[in-house]
Structures are given as structure tokens and as C-alpha cells.
Length: 118
Image 1: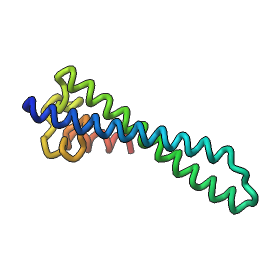
Image 2 (image 1 turned 90 degrees about the vertical axis):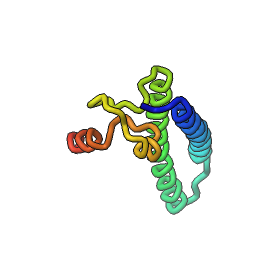
Image 3 (image 1 turned 30 degrees about the vertical axis):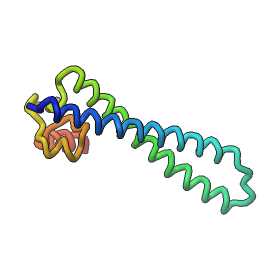
């Protein structure tokens, strides 16, 4: 079971990351809007802009997914269920939470879910 100081530490880390992602999402969205308004003079300009847009879109998708995971983890802290595996309901190890603050599964259950997704 996590101590109050440990929970507070994770809450702070998650909140900081959430703010950073929200800034990134806002900045990337503005950048994408700006690209749509560019006057592209040739195929090279268009190709370069398209490639950057594709990469930025992929980053946006990944960051939105991470943001959802962070919000879920913050809700779990409020509900008192943070650090508990969603599958086996055992505590998620502290080393795992340190690496991935928004982990939803212990390592054993994560491996099971990854195999099921393949």
C-alpha cells in the first residue's frame, strides 16, 4: 500500500505531466492550423508539409492517449484505488509506478493484456 507522501508525489508528477501535455496539444494544434493556411509553391513544399503533419498527428494521438491515462490515474488517487492492478487487484510495484506513473496493471497482468492485443 502506498503512503500518503508517495501518493502526493505521484499526484504531483501526474499533474505536472498533464499540464505539459495540454500545452503540447494546444501548441501542435495551432501549428497544424498554421500549416493548413500555408501557400505551398511546389510538390516538395507539399510533401514536406504533409510528412510533418502526419508525424504531428501521430504525436497528437499518442499524447491524447497518455493524457487520458493520466486523468484516469488522478481519478484513482481521489478514489483511493491508485496503484492497484485493474486485473488481479494486487498492488502494482513501486518501481513500476516510478517508471510509468499511470500504470493500470502489474507487470504480470500487463504481459497478459499485451499478448491478448496481438
